Amino acid sequence: PPIDESRVVRVESPADGVRLLRVDRPAARNALSMEVRRQLAGYLGECARSTEVRCVVLAGNPQAFAAGADIKEMADAGTVDMMKRGVLDLWRATAACPKPVIAAVRGYALGGGCELAQLCDIIVAGRSAKFGQPEIKIGIMPGGGGTQRLTAAVGKHKALRYLLTGDVFGADEAFAMGLVSEVVADDAVEPTAIAMACRIAAMPPLAAELIKDVVMRGMDMPLEAALTLETRALHLLFSTRDQKEGMAAFIEKRAPAFTGT
Ligand code: CAA
Image 1 (cartoon, rainbow, N blue to C red):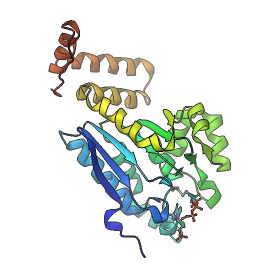
Image 2: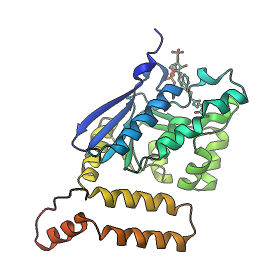
Image 3: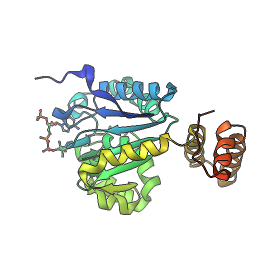
């Protein structure tokens, strides 16, 4: 049966403050159709605006986090068709979430799927997860940040080794290269990602957002400017109640109650 594109991303609420967005197109190994991309960007925008959501988990299914762009959707496309699809805007909208986003990767994370994981802030991978940028094998190249984010994460020589051969690599190799944050048993991927999201959700959210913001912006800046941005952001947090609460709780030897104000 044809895939029902109306519900290719599912929204789950596994814990207080945590939203899990699940790419759910198993018949196509979670290939990123335009509809998946639109729904991901839309739901992440909702998470960004929600006062309840403190941390987001992106997940797929046991076989695939996402096997890349939908090849069937673009096989016959021309340059103008590709330009009109506006995929870059959707990638930007997906990457723009100011709240922490954790990728929970089981199975294949290839091409655009690997890039989707890379635009998350933390990557938890199952021991049998498979990563790669195989675009070259089908006559194209990455278009969702793979040439830039992969290189930033693992360095030029490792990145080009995989970008030019299209070879797939496992979770342990990805961890050794610095592409993933943590490797766990396949069954533990989502519980681990959700538990980490819960711990982040319990942190003062303004501090979490500023930490992410300074890390992301700082990567594109000269060091001195980035260090100034860091200091200004730190000083800003001294006008939040959560700073007063966090420090008072430490001194009074009690658990802090953060309010996001
Ligand atoms: N696009 C469209 N359909 C896909 C797909 C994709 N990226 N990946 C898998 N599928 C479909 C298959 O066509 C197949 O459909 P049918 O049942 O209708 O034949 C179904 O999913 C199952 O796939 P397989 O039978 O191949 O499953 P497998 O378990 O043997 O292999 C796989 C899984 C290794 C992921 C293999 O499917 C594969 O190599 N997929 C393509 C990976 C790829 O090249 N990704 C890069 C895409 S380009 C890109 O991402 C660049 C960009 O942003 C511009």
